[in-house]
Length: 412
Image 1 (cartoon, one colour):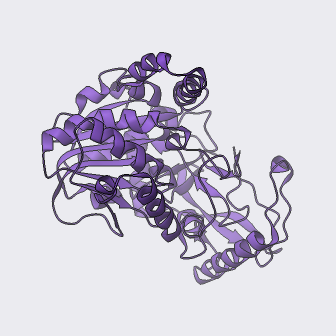
Image 2 (cartoon, one colour):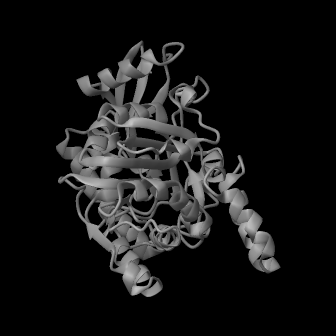
């Protein structure tokens, strides 16, 4: 869906939803006042930038501005009463399958193995994965969570200390930065890359231009363009080489020119082990397909998905789908081998989901039906099964068996 200019003055918080999103609930006055403060901060950044702020910077402020950004503030984000539901929030199946997939790697690494989770969400994944790894006799020496949100970190700590045994809870640590010293084990990220600040671009008269955010005469955020810098031009040249035809005039989309540097920052110190990323996205040819000419930008607010990134800054999530070909290039570019790439459905079915459902036949009917519903949402094509993809990397270990069922690496 194409982003639109929201009819909301930059210095006010009394905007009504656009007609295309009129069914969304309107935030309460306190939330609107919070959004107004962030909107004013972004307005100041636009002024300091000379009237046009790169969209990636707008997205960065909207999501991560200290105390005001969507992931920096304290609003509930995950689960049925939040803005969206992630796989770990549905129940234990997702975490159990991921744990089963990485358990052989952790055992192969041995006593020094660590599990590093990027963005711990509500803490549901860590809770369920640690229990499963204990059952599989594959507990890491440390379970490390990198969580930029102080509010989410507090919620994770409260949840894990309340629900895990003291022995398991004692293994969990929180850090502020990726590790810089060499380590071994598993790095895991679920729905993280989609929230990296994305660069928006367009093809105009055969040239690449960068989409920026400005303010119109009525004080509303609006789209503007400026010449692409060298980093974006180079990134688009690499993208074009992998496509069957050049992107046509009028094409709009996203790119992550900084992805190789980000991967190096988070995983460059992983001396031996595996990386696993789960997110929604496509291989490059599908990501930049002719029919996807307005890009993949998507926003989430109170279980409603829409395409307006200018609506209520700080109160909604802003995401862009993942170019998994770019992710494969970034991972192999820092010395990892690609272990595999598959849909989420194939990844889960290849790592114990079928066995879990077979065992569920002996459960009471209510529990069995709950697991069946959970499995459907995780694997059905119209739900998460095809929209979400899994990609693994390995260095000095064998992670390929986790992708033995339904590997699509050839599509990259």
